[in-house]
Length: 431
View 1 (cartoon, rainbow, N blue to C red):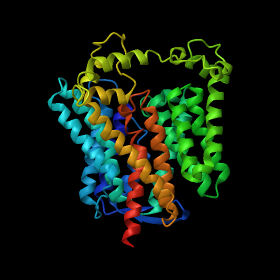
View 2 (view 1 turned 135 degrees about the horizontal axis):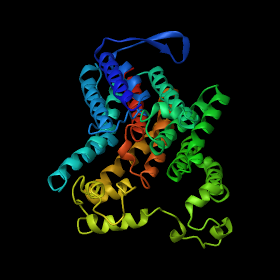
View 3 (view 1 turned 180 degrees about the vertical axis):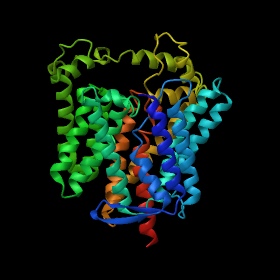
View 4 (view 1 turned 60 degrees about the vertical axis):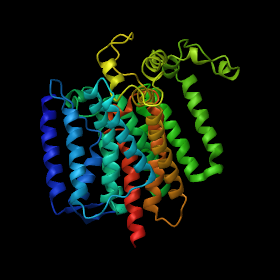
């Protein structure tokens, strides 16, 4: 069935190119399904691109179809910046991310593996072009809602395909595999949570919040469980500030209870599945009790080999990934280090981690101040709380996984919401 992914890729690419370069067309208004609304070419392309980020369209063989799809989307977004008649919006976060990208490029010069470094740069480039393209393209709440709802529909379809027996055999490689999809569901969970509070469709969005939580629990993906928990905590802090502390405490309690009282999670979390919550209370549980699947050892080995002695600049963009892909390490057949921050430190040093971390720190702070500025219309504030909360959740998952490897489905979503927020603010200021 993988052969069909080439056909899907050709169809999506053709539609994307036609829509991007066209004068525009009509789409259903998400705020009133009895009406249509006119979107110009870049706006229609944005709706299509944001909705289909969860489609990996992978295929075995020498041709890396996922990498080609990523490159095509980046090229289309860059072309779109010249076609749209509005300028991209620059913020401190985007400037810092751009400096981070420049630092990755500098890292190629002293990297012993520049080809792998180029691949990493392409993965980190996508969130940047998504932010810039969204900020230039999206000016209206209707387009923000349209692209978001369509992305959620695609995510729901992926869940159905994952969980309906045998049907997933018909869609091999169409969607990103479980790990990436579960991280994508963090953004979809926050989107549903936001619509729960800001629209009158309470029951529907409450149900969808639960739907996007369940996969990571059923699959026992600790990374996405932690990411979803943090995203919920940040969401309530955005909305209620200090008053949210009891709710945040309740979320933490629910997380701890799930770790100790859901057998599948407890068995995966600890070496000894008989650990109890009383041991946590007495301080008997330490780092040594946690089953990291070898992550702690990998991180220590990687930092000793590539970071220590090169603390400021690292050992070069792509160096760590090439080492793991070539299996020149003592951890068997593992091909990724399962920590994006360790990879940044090893490849690009403290300068890299400060630029990357600073970008998203300012992004979350910008979203927080925007959400709590009641002079902004509700569409901007909704976009702000989604971007800030989902960014926090996805950033946490980067600590225990190489999230950037599937950037189309993961990091690009908080960045996309942030870019749409900037675009709508620009229109508001123009008025």
